[in-house]
Length: 283
Image 1 (cartoon, rainbow, N blue to C red):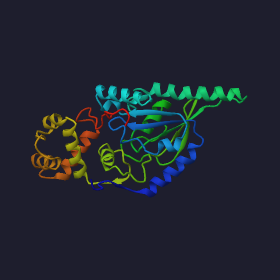
Image 2 (image 1 turned 135 degrees about the horizontal axis):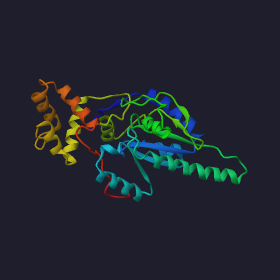
Image 3 (image 1 turned 45 degrees about the horizontal axis):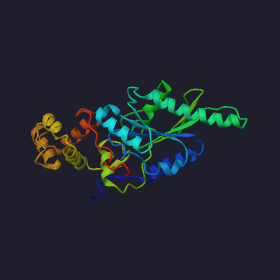
Image 4 (image 1 turned 30 degrees about the horizontal axis):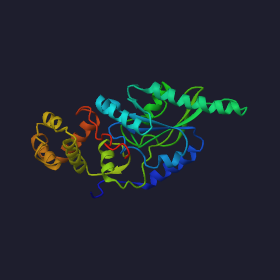
């Protein structure tokens, strides 16, 4: 697959450098991924950056996948020795469990401090993840008030800031970070489809065509047929966009592609995951 997605390393490098500096002061990392693409939206360098620090894995946008997919991911992460926390940060679902998990880390840290004769202090947590996966919305929910910018548009958080959640937790809101190079273009395209890529350049028509092919592959073709009155079963994603443009958009393929992407991103097509857990639990 040729490189459909391009992004700008300069901006990323700056955010990454700032984040690495602050990570030295952090006790626990909250990594937020997109529940529709939990593997593609996991930053491959996070384990290396955080080392032995505790990590709380948050799958946000749980409202955008069916309950059956949530259960499959829950079981799969459990088989990997990890607890997955599912949230809908926009609506406040699942926030309390994330807060309790972070506080539990703080209790353990202060137990060790007390053993050394040190006074207790708030646990220092950082929220990291790709742009637009819902980090700022999660922080606002943890705080119980809006203190950091939050929007569907990627790249809203521009600089690192510490916010006091309570006497128990201090939280660092960091800009979205993506790898300076993402070798797996399939993952890059999933990030573009879900709008989790930040400042990037891509062809809407190509990305929308791949979305159609992916939905057919994942057995969601009937959703496309009922919503758009175009039969996707015997045609390619490109042909689907061409037909949709002819029927509804005066042959404007760009408009048809953007509409398809927006319908998926806003959940208008329904609760649709683009990834399921690997069948081999060792992978």
